[in-house]
Image 1: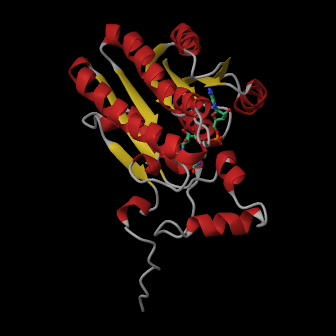
Image 2 (image 1 turned 90 degrees about the horizontal axis):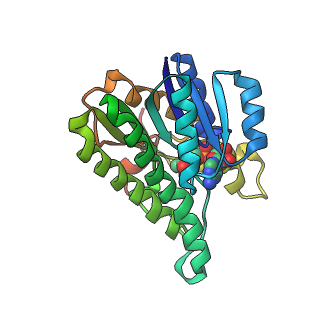
Length: 255
Ligand SMILES: NC(=O)c1ccc[n+]([C@@H]2O[C@H](COP(=O)([O-])OP(=O)(O)OC[C@H]3O[C@@H](n4cnc5c(N)ncnc54)[C@H](O)[C@@H]3O)[C@@H](O)[C@H]2O)c1
């Protein structure tokens, strides 16, 4: 049986990825810092989701997740997804903010790649997907550390792809646009109801709507699978066209 590690699997995009990979027949080890939410999700998804509680900023958490995945099957798939919304402009930052943000958002993905590669190398087979962001290629106001980390995740992806492509291990990045998850709910203006907040967020993309976590999970499943056997080192936007556009022009009027 194929086993997979998905970080941040308790909710949002990571949960949708877990659901999708379980549907593909995988045993999924979900590594998440929120033990309560992770247990709730395991209750909903069943034993095909194996919870491991830990912080992606801690190397040993990745080792524990990898151990669990190897006990259950052949560790072939690894998704570095866990993340935090980390707001702050340069004049507002202190060292603690920078260190904590980079530890989760960038170190977490680097640690995950390093542990995954070591476990996959003996079989010369594996596929890693890193969840970056459109903010890895274009800055949002007041997101210095998050933007820098997400750009780092893209280069982490390319570096792993270059080093291990010849050894049977592929690595790709997805750049989500605005996706409807608990993280996004937390960023909506509090004076708006959720529906109106999401509608306004959706206007930032040419498709005039936010994305759903399942729309990310579908692309993750493809990139992990052998259907993507010649895709390596790619940065794939799943953003409704947001990064294809410069400036927020209104949509074209057509007859
Ligand atoms: N939601 C969006 O619009 C959006 C857009 C672009 C990129 N992303 C990225 O997608 C990924 C998932 O985001 P989401 O919207 O599903 O977020 P979310 O907050 O809804 O879920 C994130 C999950 O990660 C877990 N997590 C947080 N810090 C962790 C840590 N240190 N160790 C282990 N687990 C941890 C949380 O407990 C939670 O279960 C993140 O990397 C995020 O940056 C999200």
